[in-house]
Length: 346
Image (tube, rainbow, N blue to C red; front, side):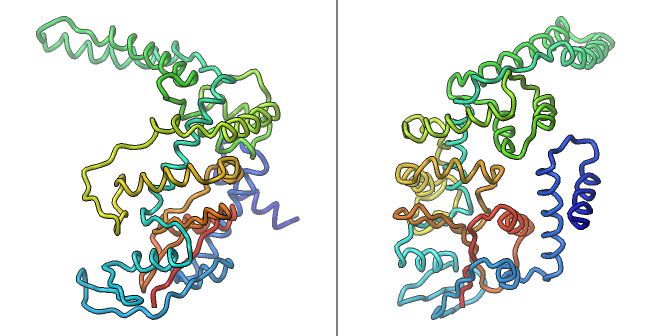
């Protein structure tokens, strides 16, 4: 009990000006404790994964030739230019569907699903009318610009003040439209709220609403009930066409079915679409919401077993270290039981 109280005091010190629930304080304290433990391991990927009981998969029988960017990895009689491709082939040989996109394909899946959920939940919220306060700030800056304009006697009438009024009004109208889900747009602040909804009590919920400039007639428990209903409705409908607007446009990358690492290639989007068509949406939503929106990892591979709906995020290493982002994702994986795995090319 004494240790738990010390951890909470640490969380309070980290966020002295933020109203947090007890669960949030405990999560922050635990995150810091895990980070300190990992910092003592000299960024040894295998040691870190073993310490927290994450699977370490050794991929043996790989022959290496060449050096630098001309390295060739030969596995089971086939040559690969990257170790990630060896790992991709390894997991595919076991029946998994795999993308090497460092979380990009998974991001498409989650972002599109959460967009639909935000639109579904938008009807329970109102945009807080803060136009008078925002206008006060905007006019202060506009008057200064107008004064500078008049000093220099530039051509044409100064319009800074008129534009300030227009921008504030336009911003407020756009927030209302996003809460209504017009043109497929959604209120991003609502996503922030949904990410943390299971950790909030009524006090922290009210503070959160104030920070996000949102209002609602529901208390936190009623809102959680509406969220559960919305998840069930969307999962039963499974409207794939409604997701199309949220898929990114394909960038100007070279089409290559063997290397889909590049962001927004046809193969990355194709993988996301197939996953959305085959996976259970309710499981996806629940896994995301129960983990404060952290059901992901910026690892090389996203590996899916469509027969069981099992998903894991795999980082591939030869002899290199984990990046700072990857170390943060390991901490989140420990905190939220996110399925991650380390594949070591031998």
